[in-house]
Image (spheres, helix red, strand yellow):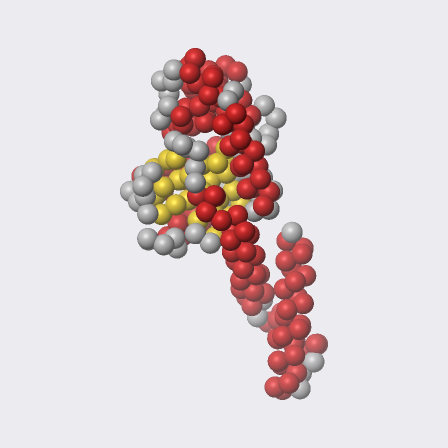
Length: 230
């Protein structure tokens, strides 16, 4: 994807900047190249502008469904005026690495609503995703979410221990985890992730910004700050 973006940027640069320089000062492609080498920040700015435009188009295509969570699968303030959407997998090390950043954002911003979309793409993580949604149905999503990440990789044992730590009604949770509603939610999240062209977890949406990977607290905070209501 990065190669495609770079190629598109070069085409734009030589198509518009090069043409403009030629018409204004008689300079050709060689001088345009020299200009770009002396001002490399232009390329970075154009790359970011193109990425933002493409992100906006993909977000418009998926619509408001992205922000409509599975009942209870929300962290922070469920009625908050700023929304961060998080696609996560409990077997993902980068998701675990990002967890302190998300907790910090929630602690610092009482208006932050974090919609979590369970996207189990790693082997063995679907059982954890199903139990997480079962915890959401009982209003214990955040407790289960944090407990499982603290216990490490999801296994039958760690999922059971996280469910116990979250105070779940286990019989009820197992029924919900195996339900058609949970299966439909996982399928929905898969489709949303593919439509947004995510390549892995974690992946984030804040307003019209898309971020992928363990981008760190500063990048997430800056993206959230741009959301309407900030």
